[in-house]
Image 1 (tube, one colour):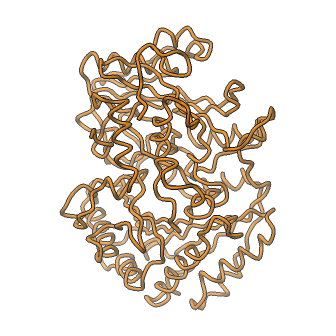
Image 2 (tube, one colour):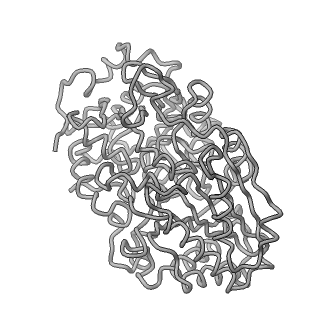
Length: 531
């Protein structure tokens, strides 16, 4: 295990004073901004996407350079104050905003996207949002990263936890294109400094890169910059150093009314979905050009939706999409419904923006929420699908935003990468599922949280309430943190949360934690523990 040392030169660790003067770290665009509780901005800066979690820190430090992050961390460490970091603000658990946090470091001023000719890679600063990343990378160079579909998600948490989206079956996870990271860490003496770590196996900080490539945010330090370059890509042309998205995509949106779904039909839809992704999970599958989402919203929503994207320029794209929709709806008796909603051919970036605009919750700043996740290697059983049906049609509970979302963002190119190459351990899953509910009124907290717990516990009743890695399931996604996962009242599986999130990679993550954050400065309820 290679750890950090004091007094390292550029390319390794550098102190704040060196950062401020180095041409690799230009003068800050603006000075740091400190927001205290009496500032009108404080209310906005102490709550994220999930309105359930509101912080009360002594202050929020809004930064716009790595040097400012180093200084902010050093100031908090010297004062003995508890730190949290916010990138996009989409943490679904109270990790960033909670009563224990005394200083929030807000990276929203650190949002640049550029090409770094020294590293032959694209530099994305830690506070950039996905919408801006996609826009800049594509419009300037015609490239992208295969990330998620919510435009306001920050790159910091998204990439640190792995990162998935509609292009991931075709091109891999976001971290599969991660060339290097710049991380502000704190050593055993309490000194903050910035470390650059790369995927080069000879890099003395390679283990830090490995941990930041899927180990989750808020554990090892503050990631101030990500460099992206597709493995094996080389040459002087930036446009050839990262994946190029499809010129056009086929975008299919099919709504199936709940009136057409009794329990048998609903169960058939769920098991059909899982079977298709199970059969097409191999890295070499021609169907890796296609990814879809099945939004199985509560019956009060009126319909369930199948949203699918396929690379329109790939051989046989229309046939693959048609076969896919046929396989998913076989036996449902809804052929006329599917035929009446033909796919649209759209330029890739336009499709990205259309998908984002079609999901109001992505940009609604008033919602409260709760979610749980599961990776699947095999399709859901009829009994599990029946448990979903019972919850989604339950009398006395009517929330159109309560849903089971089957996400075809696993398999394909993601599974071509060995589980130990990055900290993202879930490399043989076929698909992924989000169990979620959102609401606006705090008075509805108990009903919604209780509904979600009952749903999830029923689906995974056979394995103690959680998707224990095994023949069918493969654990949980660290980027959808679940506060209940550490509670034995809900997680009765006997399998600890560390294993559900990280599987066999957890011991190595602990070693990295000990090497780069021995004082446990960066921590939250589900961060990697010191060994």
